[in-house]
Amino acid sequence: MQKVILASSNPNKLREFREILSPLGWEVVSQKEAGIDVDPEETGTTFEENSAIKARAVYNIAHSAVIADDSGLSVDALGGEPGVYSARYGGTRDDKAHNAIVLEKLKNVPDEARTARFVAAITYISDNGEEKQFVGTFEGRIGYEERGKNGFGYDPIFMVGEISSAEMSPEEKNAVSHRGKALRALAEYLGNL
Ligand code: IMP
Image (cartoon, rainbow, N blue to C red):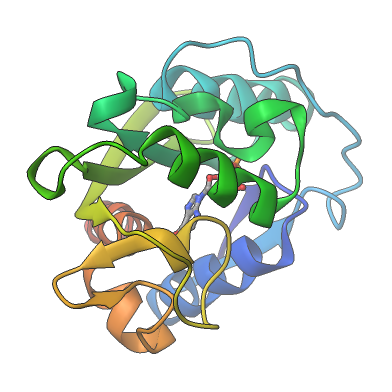
């Protein structure tokens, strides 16, 4: 079994990566399990850059295969915000506060201009230092109120047709989500190595 370190301490990300990569013969260990204590500043201006920053920080210590992901919401009417600031939008890490800010900023924006997408960028660095990136997107619109109890983050205000992504089951969301798409592209690549 080949081993890969996930450059994250987020248990949800670890579970998702394990579910998809274990059947392919990859053992995913968390950064913590690998004994690596590093939390680089995400100074990039794109998801791809920040994903690479996280992966390289761990690779430079471990010198073995690493994956990292960076993700967020991009709202067209806000010029791409919250973007790379999604997790700390408005200077807070509180999801409800994030959603309230976006809804308030879009209060006079009509239906057709409320388009948005989630983006996930995954960076894989092999044992010998070769880098590969996979990006997945998930298109939708910003709603008018929070809806649904599933998911996390901006899901309650992210509408896909008539329902929010917080009203989708985890299986439904994974089948179409940004992270699901990027992870499947990574899995296909690793499966073909
Ligand atoms: P990261 O952990 O630095 O990549 O931050 C990602 C942030 O983007 C999260 O804290 C959420 O606010 C937001 N985000 C990313 N993916 C999703 C999703 O699938 N649903 C809702 N919010 C998401």
